[in-house]
Image (cartoon, rainbow, N blue to C red; front, side, top):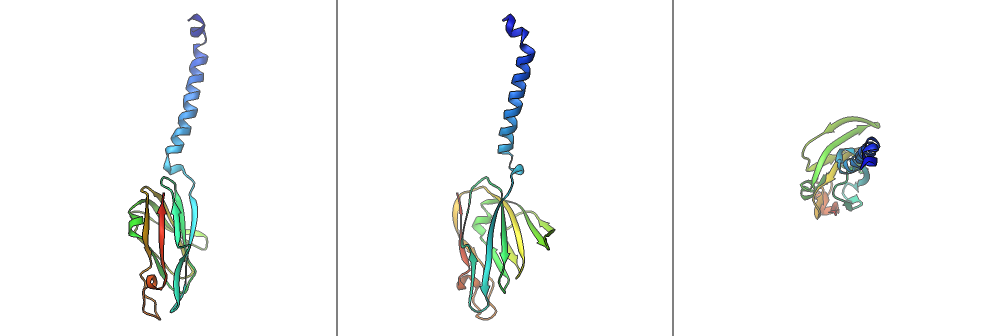
Length: 162
């Protein structure tokens, strides 16, 4: 007991440093605000009067991870990225709009649909909080030439959250 008491300052410092080290590791692992985003790109493609589609048409995410979904419209038409069921299963941190590689706007709050005009892109930052398979990804813009909804012309998709 005398040896324990003699070395108490050393033991106390060792235990304190040990707890501090491991508590910060555990804390940062559970602190979702400190995550680096995982970049995922989806392209909106198509030609008026012919075809419209997402590439890829299947997106996969994991709960608890921060994603930056980069939605790029490289077609000749405006498009929607709409999946109400997916939007209800995530926490949206922000939508970020960039112009000439400069951030020009951030939108915060509940988002259920994103519209992107030709030649532009947006970033949707989110954390999935509920697992599921969402087959309701679609674009309901009407094609100027065929007068059909883009979804009827092939612009549909699936989002899987594991």
